[in-house]
Length: 275
Image (cartoon, rainbow, N blue to C red; front, side, top):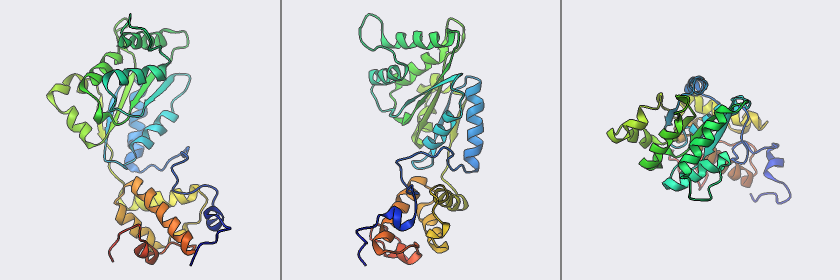
C-alpha cells in the first residue's frame, strides 16, 4: 500500500522526536549495568586528576557515556574539551587542542606545544581556576608523537602536580596499542584502561523501550517478537539498533502499518534476516 503523501511519519506514529534519530542527544542516556559502573569510576578518576582510556567495539556506547560524564561535571571547576578525531597528524592534533582552549596558533617564535603547556598551567593558577579535561575520540588512530605530547600536557612542572586529565576513547585496537612496550610512557600515566562491551539481550530490549519512551512513542510500536528479533540481530550494538529501528519505521510508514511485527522485519528489503 502506498504511503499517505499528506501525512508525515511523526503524525502517523504520533511522536514529536524520532525515537532512533541521531539529530538530538538525550540529557539522560540509557545506561546498562556496566555503563553505570564506568560512569561512577570516570567521575571519581576525574575528581582526583587522573587520566584513563576507554576502549570497545563501535556501537558499544563509548562516546555517549563520556559525553554524559562530561555533562555531569561542575562547570565552575572543570573545563571539558573534546577532540572528535584522533587521526590527525601531530601538528593537527596540537592545533585541535589549541582551538578548544582558545590558544593562538599563529607565529613560530614559541612552539605550539609550549604555548599549550603555558595555557593549561595558567588555567590552574588563576583565582577561579578550572581543571581541563580533554577527551580524544578515535584515540586508536593517534600517532605515537601525539600520545607523547599528551603526556607532557598532563603534568605541571612548576607546581609538580597534575595539570589536566585526558580520556582516550577508541576501538579494541586502542588497548592493544597501549600494551606495546613503546607505549610504556603513555600507559604508566593512565590510571586505568577500561573496555566497554555491547549490551546483553535484556539490556538491548530495555534500550529500545527507553528510546521509545523518551520519544513518547507507545511500546506497542514493536510487538514482542519484533523486539526479540531486533535484539538478537543487532547483538547489543546500539548503533545497529538505532539504524535498524530507523529502517523499520520507514518500512512501516510506507506500508501504513502502525505496529512493527516480525513479519514486517522478515519482509523488509533493507534488512536481511533469515527465518
